[in-house]
Length: 153
Ligand code: FES
Image 1 (cartoon, helix red, strand yellow):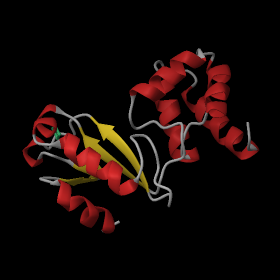
Image 2 (image 1 turned 30 degrees about the vertical axis):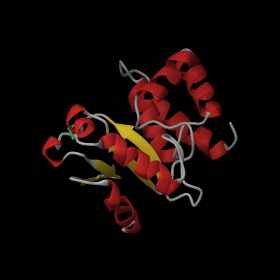
Image 3 (image 1 turned 120 degrees about the horizontal axis):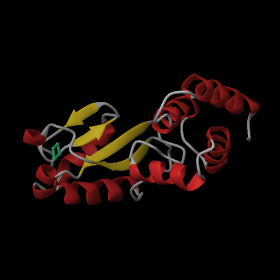
Image 4 (image 1 turned 90 degrees about the vertical axis):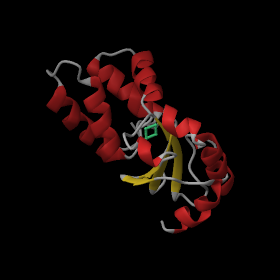
């Protein structure tokens, strides 16, 4: 573990969930909230402490878009790729964001401000295509809205 402080924080979280069935996701979620992301060394540590195979931890982190093994930017930009958003141009919005931020999905812009992600349906299909920035929904977007939208952050 790189930092003793991280190990202490992680130990406390693991102890809290130790006897809870299906504890892997809540443990990872809380660690990410405290530490910011889930680097490989943290995954290995959790694997040993919870006695869960590293491959299972890696699988969970890869499957759920809210987990990240890379440091996150100040804001997370999530492009909804659910059906309604997809048919109304989500792919074009995603391409515009990639170009504007100069990143691929899962990466963070060089200035550390934005991490680009894709999400499943966020439940506001009538506003498709939708982009979530942190907890806020932005809907009925077109490619030309993207620079102005990011500038608000
Ligand atoms: S498909 Fe995007 S909000 Fe439902």
